[in-house]
Image 1 (spheres, helix red, strand yellow):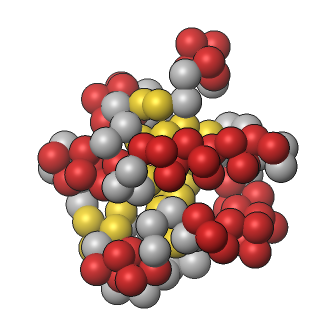
Image 2 (cartoon, rainbow, N blue to C red; image 1 turned 30 degrees about the horizontal axis):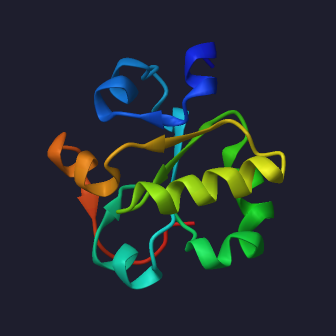
Length: 119
């Protein structure tokens, strides 16, 4: 990962798109909003892990994040920052926060879906 990014956890959609690799599974979008909001709409292929249930899903996050960068998605950047700090404290450090969250993702014209957790 770029050293500049390691110091600043926030990334914009424009920056994220510029970092894309040819592999579709480069990113693990981790949606930390409440489950009900996730079910309404979410990033295609994302993993739903409400902030209050984070510890319960640490093993699954580690498994799904192997070789990938986690991108935290929510509506509030402060919620994502809390999750980011929580993950780092548990040695899960290849992680970014999508600045502007789900709204920024939508504004960039990316695909959203509704329905159950694909994990």
